[in-house]
Image 1 (cartoon, rainbow, N blue to C red):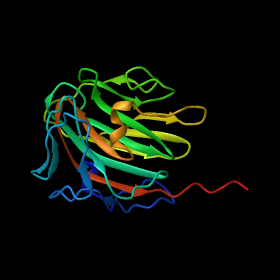
Image 2 (cartoon, one colour):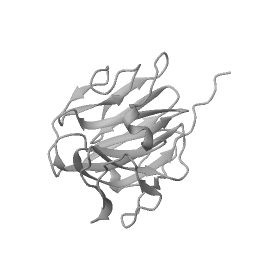
Image 3 (tube, one colour):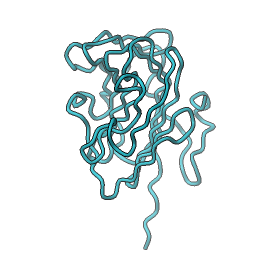
Image 4 (tube, rainbow, N blue to C red):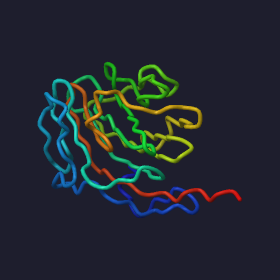
Length: 205
C-alpha cells in the first residue's frame, strides 16, 4: 500500500513529499468523538481508530489546524460490521466543505456529497463498487482551487472540476467540519491518517 512509504512519495514536479501524520497509532491525539447524537464508542485498538456502530452515525473530528486548500489527505479504512458507509470523510475545499462517501446507500455507493446540491447517490461522481468486510482500502483526496481528485487503492476514481459548480455537505455531517471521518450504522476502522501541503500553481503573468 502507498501509505507505507511516507517520505518516498512524490506527487509531481515542484510538490513536497513530506507527509504529516494525523494519527500516531496509539492515541486519538487531536481527534475528538463527533457529537452526532446516538454515536457509538470511539477508541484506539490494534493501531487503528475504531468507530463502533451508532444510531446512526459515529465519527471523529479533527480539533487542530488543517489547511483549507492545496493539500492531500489519505488514510486506510475498512468495514468491520454493518452494511453502510464505513468511511465518510468531510474536508475543506477553500471556505466550503465537501464529503467523500465510501460504501454508502446499502454498502456500495461512492461519491462526493454534495455537488450542485446533489448528494453522493445522485451526481456525476456517483459510482457503485463492491467492498469486502475486513479488507483495508486506501483512500486519498487531493484538493486544489481547480478540482477535487479522489483515489481508491492508488487509482483515481473521481476527478471533479470546481469551476461552475457548488460543493456542500449534507446537514447530518455538519458536526464533522472542518475535517472529520464518520460511519453510518456500521462498525469501521481507520488508520494511517496523514496529509501534506501542495504548492500552489504559479500565476500566469
